[in-house]
Amino acid sequence: MYQDLNKQVVVVTGGSRGIGRAIGERLAQEGMKVVINYHSNREEAQTVVDKIKAHGGQAVAVQGDVSQESDVHNLLQTALQEFGRLDVWVNNAGVESYAPTEKVSLSDWQKVIDINLNGLFLGSMAAIRHFLQQDQVGNIINVSSVHEQIPWPGFTSYAVSKGGSKMFTQTVAMEYAKHNIRINAIAPGAIDTPINAEKFADEANKQDTIDLIPMARIGKPKEVAAAAAWLASQESSYVTGATIFVDGGMTLYPSFAEGKG
Ligand code: NAI
Image (tube, rainbow, N blue to C red; front, side, top):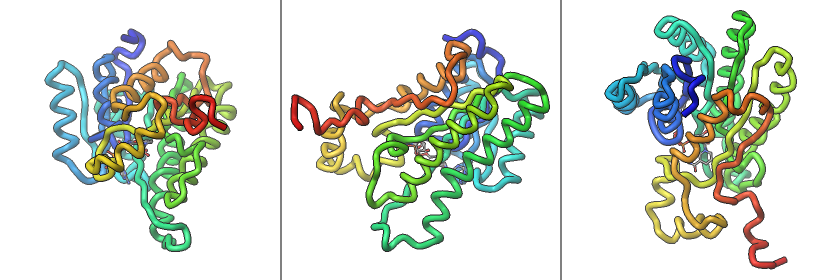
């Protein structure tokens, strides 16, 4: 438990399922008041809010597309109206799209960049402007991916968006460090969430993924959420511009295991 998080306020984008849901629920356990942003599934988001409330926490579900500036503005306003402040902003919403690069349409490319990268920019800007206006300590957490480091053929837009997220995190961390605004990233490996449901439904595909992981298992959303709780808390007070890999060792060049190479 991180006592300093008690009664603080967090916005989690794409918080109705998967990693975002786990982050919202974990931060609520820490006593934070949570704004759960969802894109299209109100029922899913309400389930998360109801669960948090059933455990004595405070949460609200807010519809919004992270690639739309007005929707992101509305997320911030809701946090302020409902809970009176903002302490932490988690840019989690993300999508991926597969196609060989020569077949990627401009609109498919733009969709991934709009949500994964422009959405992260808009969310961070809303939070930073607020933190500066209030002259307060601020904290931003970006859910990136091991693909901010590992190239991923067929998922070029996704890898580019996560590579951009890495440089955004580092650049903005440097820019606002003097204002006590920290910005860090979490890079999950293969995590058991709806984004992977189809792939992992096929045992052979799932095993192909497991073969890339030194710890030889798929990660759990709550293992990513644990890193988010630490980054949100003052326990990480001297950490900014960092990426925490939560990947079972996926980024450790597993093809070199057992002395190969
Ligand atoms: P997911 O598909 O379960 O969740 C993604 C969430 O983003 C959904 O709630 C979806 O509604 C929301 N979203 C999509 N477009 C949106 C928009 N325009 N505005 C607001 N919300 C929107 O996937 P998962 O796995 O929970 O992904 C969360 C983040 O973690 C993503 O950024 C993803 O790239 C990243 N990630 C996931 C990994 C995994 O293995 N599951 C691995 C590495 C990174």
